[in-house]
Length: 238
Image (cartoon, rainbow, N blue to C red; front, side):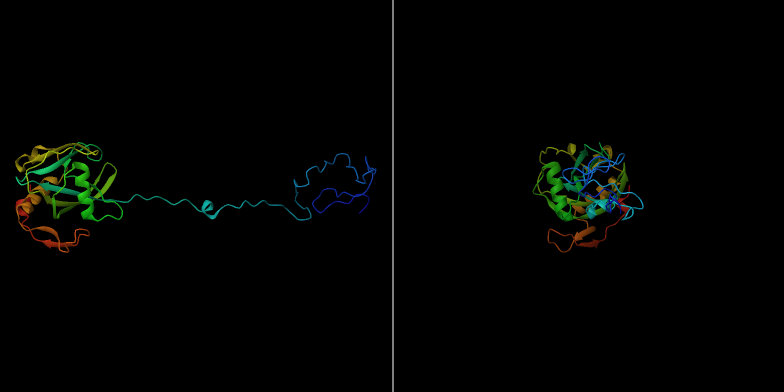
């Protein structure tokens, strides 16, 4: 191949030789030719199309998780519970919401069902957290309500509950602005969410002992297994 032998990667292969333009030096290494860059860093190889190995490609190896598309978060409707607690005088415990949605309106204490939690457990927890009330007896389901408002989508299960004593003084929790024990004659004077007034009337009838709504026929106190009992709807409208 003549006095200079090119390597397969396009550089110059050192051979015993002369310094300068083709002259050999004392160390036996051939000097570089004019116009040809020195091969100072043999690791930094610059390939060119048509070389001995063809075009060179760099492959960046990334973990599989980094190359997969990110999962898409799809909003899902939430399940909530609400509890209408009556004292022995027939007054119901109402909570004024301190946060959206429906901020400022009055309803039974309640909130979102947590993962791994039964409806019964959620109902008891929400009453305790929002009002501090304990020692109440949880009854059946009086209604199931779907609400879509202010960007929220809830399916709410309304329970009836009772206490066998006079209404105690309670302090509102973090999510509540105020609490009140409200007699049936005063319900219409409160800012209630749409559709709650007939539910309150039905719940009051259940508290009075009128059969109706969904009862937990399993009676285990954890998972709610419903049994339908009829109620006269005529008196519940309004």
